[in-house]
Length: 165
Length: 128
Image 1 (cartoon, rainbow over the protein chains, first blue to last red):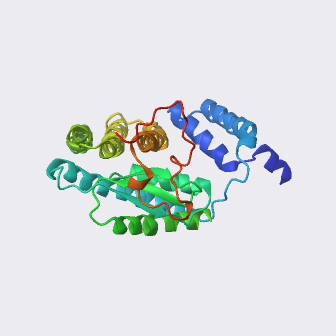
Image 2 (cartoon, rainbow over the protein chains, first blue to last red; image 1 turned 90 degrees about the vertical axis):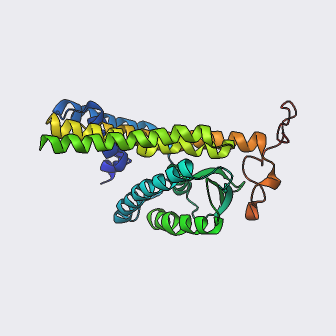
Image 3 (cartoon, rainbow over the protein chains, first blue to last red; image 1 turned 90 degrees about the horizontal axis):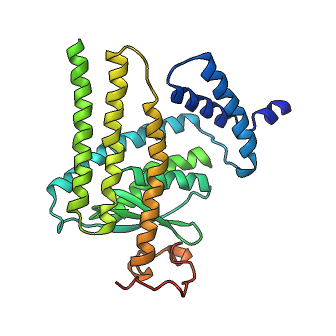
């Protein structure tokens, strides 16, 4: 078991790299599988010093649920924002800064949350507070900033908390 | 059947075209720089997503071979787009926003971009 840990210090990364190499090659063959596996062993081995204390993912079904929720939100938010851009007069729009107090403490989890907020159109995460306790988000059109904040907290942060912490 | 497949692919291409257009149109229509930042995030999600889905369907349904490396484009976009947006946003906050104009940062008092010592060599443009 210990030897296995030495060879595969980061099994998820090994699987991911092998998979990405397969997709890059775009033609399933033994050749690309072996080379992908080789990369998947060498790269985690070399980069090991760069990820001390990496967080453990606890809840795999939640990861799938999170991805589906985010994809769905991206589609719905795209339609909402397209409507704002095309049909709403610029003077009626209420762009707003909102401050999202973070319960997450893991840097990786905060990164995922910030990335999600940016990729769902209508909100862009802009800055962290000095000690990393709050996230500054800019909204394209938010007459009710508190509702946006609550939605971010209940839809994304709650799930990320279950995944990472 | 062929016809239905082509219809499906055309649908995704049209969707991506519409959202790509809205994303670019937003760049012209929106007036303030922070709002303008929202427009490209749309073009990269549904705009590019639509083309990639159409491409995957085209290879599977019409050319009868599996081609999935479009998924990688999505993956790389989702990794890089938020970082670009964050850089532009941080630049904007650094040069054009004063701490008073932003919402309260809670117990940390300042947002990270403002929590650096002002370099004397750099002229302060935040008032403009």
